[in-house]
Length: 316
Image (cartoon, rainbow, N blue to C red; front, side, top):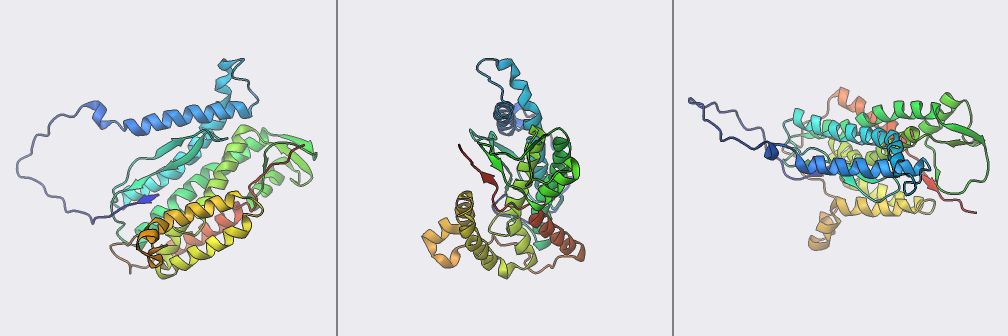
């Protein structure tokens, strides 16, 4: 989420005489940019979904539709995540954009999605609700997708495979054993595209719940204990560095967290301004008992979905 500035709720002023508003064109009321980006992302994710299905689109472009199980599942997870943020922002009276989907020439066809918050968050309770709603909403969609996808997946005896290998989290391993009745270490599971999209959904959930910077987990930490947010962010960055020896992508993610946590501000104004969370209108309102319980649930979800080595690349 991209947090800008915030304003309190303005009182409603009802005029004595109703003013006639000038007519607006339909096109100006439609979220054209959002629709275009979503359509492009649907195309790119379907394209890469078809490639994962071993479809040769140059020889048979009409098989493009075979990428839809992957793309629709993935976009459902990402969209649910972002609309969790969006709806909770609207609930708390926060000005927010609709989700922006990002098409990309990556191996899944997208770099994800995001929303922009355009006003200051009123208090810690609102910040917590907005931050935690996305990961939990996406998680609720990703788990059933994995269960359905695993039931359609293929199990083979363990062998030396080439190409991309997916790491496992505690939850994913448990789901494989529950649905397929096999131990992932002893068998190779050739994931159905729906299961692959669900796996990505769990990975996205874990990434966003890292308790650092402007990530969803960072917002949760700030709402719980604002003065410790900066140090928890630094601790997470230091933890990601050694993990990078097992998967270099963690170094990239550490840089992303570092940059969006105020590194560009520190570059201009000094290190004391780095890793500072945007202020709230009310910094003192404590979280409720129910919210603290949900925070504990979010921590459990993070521990269950975090894969220390997300990807492996064995080659002949």
